[in-house]
Image (cartoon, rainbow, N blue to C red):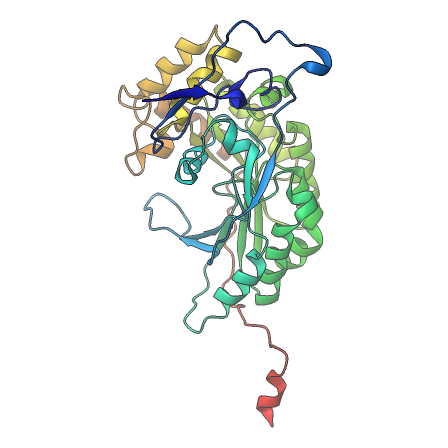
Length: 364
């Protein structure tokens, strides 16, 4: 196996990013390692610049992704972006960058792919004669409201199409930018066509900054929840992922704060460490929480049958064993006490294909 210099993994360039390395994906023939030859002591103007975000066009031909997973509540989703600048170290979508010949590490959060024709593709797929409407989930892989959305507005265009077709949508995000689209989501919610969940992993700004470096602060997410709720949009909080000995002690506090901000329901997911994420997460722990790293990983393995991860259906979301059972019990007790059990079902009976230019001629 050949090794070559990988300057993108230089820790000095990764400041403000989630991953602390940029190892190549599992399908690559060559590994890349950072070599310190003792010569690079540059500072000031001669220092290496921070890693910049690169944006490329994703030449996809379809926009709706289907799944048959028995432990997921939806069968279709939309991802306007591939990769996510939020940089959440635990993100289970990171391994998908390996399919592109890139690293699930720093590449995942700095080399992004956008789908500028997402709205056009969506309108085409919804117009297909055999299409049967069911709730479309957005934000289940990468965040549709990550920073580049503020300029590109691809998610907003997608929502405009869904509104035109009166199609139900469920959104999950860590971004306060979702409040920008209240003018679309509000009227859709009045018809029973929209709901939004904000993922709030911690109330600790410092921990959030380290785990989710470019996502909205916890207070901004709660503020967005309040704004959405005040606009009549059904809202939920996702306490996800739960990381033992890191944020699990905040469960009740996060749920209570979300309830006070207007959330009607709640959900949680146990930390998942498939494929490259297990190594990336361990690296992050050693760099950011060396005092707790061994304890955290020990508890994770206790809930994963002695392994870093168990991909079995139904178990991958919740884990097994006494510690996982305790978390589940605490969650049930807290949501019951706080009244976070008002789940909103969206309507599909209003779905209608909007008329196209010239359709009125068919009446003659």
